[in-house]
Length: 340
Ligand SMILES: NC(=O)c1ccc[n+]([C@@H]2O[C@H](COP(=O)([O-])OP(=O)(O)OC[C@H]3O[C@@H](n4cnc5c(N)ncnc54)[C@H](O)[C@@H]3O)[C@@H](O)[C@H]2O)c1
Image (spheres, rainbow, N blue to C red):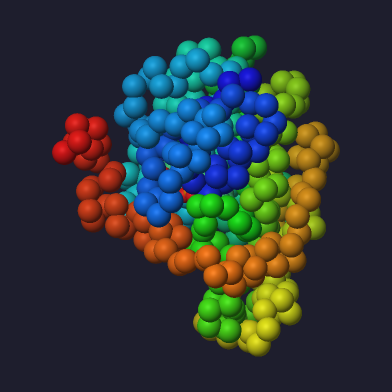
């Protein structure tokens, strides 16, 4: 199966792409490419992956042609990055991904997976499932809701779109993210012996290891059309709806001498998500728990080879790109293409 992965040089992509190759998929990546500290193109070249450095909003439609399936990961990938410039966030996260899905369908793809987010539910008392009315609280979450609606609407006899609403990721990827809760806690514990925790730690969050995200996407590619067409699946595990206090305690146990440092007023923003549907319909179950991720990240941050890069904080990447080259404008895109 020929698969196009948009945003395939990002945190999830760097785990998913090698997994897809291992599982026999013929993979092409299209990504605007924002990391400067490693040579992802050489790595993908070695794996036999075709790599295109381009922007999903403006690339030639022919670049989205000739694939059986598209996994759509390209986006500004968290709330603060989405807030930097809300109009441009809509431009990429909504219009860009609608463009990809429509072009994919028009040009013969039969399956399309969009990476959405459980943040679409907002903070709430009850456990949210796929039937729960979303309560998006940020531009990032609103764009996810809109793109789910419009891309799933494309479902018909030939075209099978589905959305995976991912829990918050943790764990190692070559494009490391330190702006996600568990990775950040472990990083701070290793480097400062402090685990920063907003009071009172009773807040629940749903988590998923990045390797399990990749596994869920592959299940979505392989599952019977009847099970997934036009469907939304929360992607995570009921066992990984965890209180932040419990995550912090686990980090404390794993990192010698680390102490919890409390801050802020009690945070009422808590949410839990029901992941029964993906387990029942796609037979997906998460293999990696929080302790696995904490130990993994702890080893990574303690190793001599580990080097901090500002680009590990997603917000910094986008701030820098906007300052340096107006990343978000078509004009800047054209100049870049012309090598100016
Ligand atoms: N990581 C998580 O916790 C998480 C949770 C839920 C949903 N998601 C979603 O999964 C997707 C991937 O997340 P990630 O963690 O890998 O993020 P990431 O920021 O590491 O990767 C996103 C990739 O998209 C690329 N990109 C951005 N705008 C582009 C454009 N206009 N054209 C081409 N490429 C572009 C970037 O260069 C980057 O490589 C995102 O849609 C994100 O919202 C992630």
